[in-house]
Image (tube, rainbow, N blue to C red; front, side, top):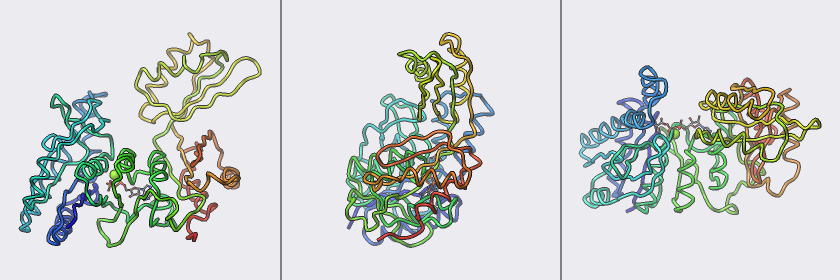
Length: 408
Ligand code: ADP
Ligand code: ASP
Ligand code: MG
């Protein structure tokens, strides 16, 4: 008998029929004698629908009220799944994040889990019930509902698996594993049998939405056996593993990630003096805007252009901050572009290989794709390109590094 945490994403619970299918699947595991905790997302499209509704009320609703609103999506699914299981003669009970007591900090809309009280879930499991938990939500010490950021149900599942010391955490979704790149962009993408935590973390942080980054962090930190599988088809999916050596495939590049949520801003012609970067970026940080890539060039005339990227949602806010400080910094102009994307190649194998960057840049150049920014680390290279090139860039790099071929 094993203890499993199963998480079902939005598409997997996207209709009454699909919830029934999930109930069938959970019942099979329960009938086999396993202890099962199920984490559910909101039905597909529901969280977006709620975001749109909020915009009709207020331009910038408070983060606290957004959490009250967005957490309702998961509450619908958890109750429906519980009913479907009970209908099948499988004892089940549903819990909101607050009812479990998934305690978070109070950073509304991007809260972090601090502690999980597993008493209720343990009691249920020991009495033979399936426990169903609303993903994506928690509660603060003082009882306010919080959410964990978009895609946060993955994190709920992994955090519960860690707290309960589950044998495995299964993330059931609408693809049958982690691929060399988003299979919706490159149909030749190949499913990976295994991927290391380090690579998965990099892929997730560079925009691969198949797993939320916090979920991968949790899994790595608490040694959770994590697998991504299809809700709709049988198969082994992809195992996220520690072991770099045991991965049969050990290519230079494991995958290509992309992120559409990007925008870049430039403050032109700023006097190139010590402290300039901090004077530009401190007011941006004060507005709670996260910065990703940064480029500053040394100039010949004593002035410099300073460029950085932010989340596309923060573009307007960041532009306003720069406009405000422009004169005080003695800058000439503020320019920006919110039609950019980031495309990245990821692989622990590139650590020990030179020439990866030039292969990447040549492949893009051969397709006439202009690179606007570059950033590198030991195991990734990212480029910023115009959004119209996203699909072409992903496919070009997939082909250039022969990711459709199995490397043994
Ligand atoms: P869920 O609602 O189940 O959480 P998501 O939409 O959040 O599902 O994540 C699954 C999606 O992630 C897939 O449909 C796929 O388009 C996308 N995706 C992006 N990169 C990858 C990748 N490397 N491998 C697999 N899927 C990916
Ligand atoms: N429903 C939330 C979202 O759409 C959380 C999740 O599905 O993981 O972001
Ligand atoms: Mg998701």
